[in-house]
Length: 415
Length: 74
Ligand SMILES: Cc1cc2nc3c(=O)[nH]c(=O)nc-3n(C[C@H](O)[C@H](O)[C@H](O)COP(=O)(O)OP(=O)(O)OC[C@H]3O[C@@H](n4cnc5c(N)ncnc54)[C@H](O)[C@@H]3O)c2cc1C
Ligand code: SF4
Image: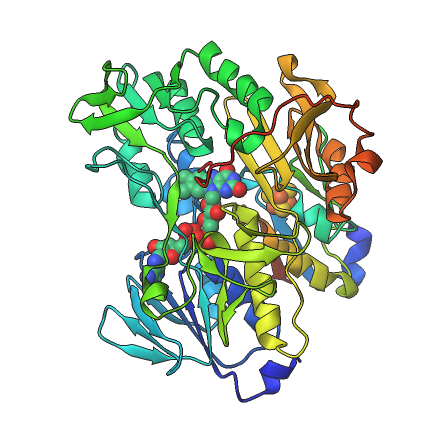
């Protein structure tokens, strides 16, 4: 048993956010031998459920909500949690070590874990659907019928998945994206083109390089003066971390709760998942990652560090994400953002079977694959985890030649 | 797999349609999990793993991003 598990100093842990990250933290604490109180506070009325299927199987009508719980009730029961569902944390006092809830209660803690995720960014004036929680997904699903017109604002991963599902259901889909090439800032122009092509082949009306000025009842007004008529609009333009309650307590917030390499933001305060920005020593940079596997891994890491305060371990993961669009499974390892070069090192993008490697400085920082077996990716992941140089992993780039110029990096997550 | 039941106190359940082929399980417990070449869906190599592997399996259950794995006591 670890120190804190024995140490009476940590008896009360409050975890705010009852989703992937919060649940992983609670599970990690119990597996680490923690017998004290765990209060899990979640704004949603549901037990922790899985979000990625919302824009895939749920939107497609293939899965009902009963497929979504992250754990069976009995497993949640076994964690022996003080579970507060439908309850929102409204503030925190890091000196007194209390969290304020919207029930009027103040809950004391020895350690606090912030796992409050993100909220969808809206366009000025609001309007349109967003897609973040179960209710959002069910509301949009109920509107998608053959022949209905859906306009999607934003061709990030979320918008692209929704567009793909809507096409599959026989909707007429228009996607409007202000960037010239969708996702170029995240995965590079070449891979962005592959995805663009796939959507166009499936009959998506993809309009790039034009912004949306207004969402109105019945469609969109675009910056070039044209309009897109639609029965429904989905706004998928990134997200904002849910840090308001942390900021009120004076905790460091800058596009996420700012944490060190041990995921600590202040004495006894930790960040997990989409809401947390932390220093990843593997890449030597501060990052905030909105990926499903990341929330689970960081939750377990925080549980370990919380229980072993004298031997904290830096959290140095290789981020991983996947996205399903039509018959394509896109998988990526590493930190692709701000890359200097992309190179296709296996397969052929035209066949949608390829592996692209990403270079930042002299390091291999990431890979993205479509249509390749898992075996093809694993050695690359190992290279990234080992901090391999580009030269060692790929071979030196031809002198003075890069396949792509450095792209401007935006702060907006690809959603 | 049947020869493992001598040591096995737990059984792994995989909900295949839920698996998103992330391969986290293979990374954490390569003795117990593999992935199909065609679609990356997980394959349980050892349904009732020996006691010394259970910690790794629990880790795999915890990090599986699709909640597709369960470890059930026999
Ligand atoms: C539609 C959709 C599809 C996705 N698809 C993929 C995918 O294919 N691949 C991938 O890697 N990732 C995907 N993701 C991302 C993935 O789901 C997230 O990274 C993951 O859910 C993050 O978990 P989290 O626990 O950090 O935050 P969240 O899941 O956002 O959970 C935060 C929880 O905290 C609650 N909360 C917020 N504020 C408060 C407060 N003040 N008090 C109490 N509770 C609060 C929220 O209501 C929420 O329940 C997808 C996300 C969405 C929405
Ligand atoms: S970790 Fe889960 S989702 Fe990933 S391959 Fe294993 S079972 Fe499938």
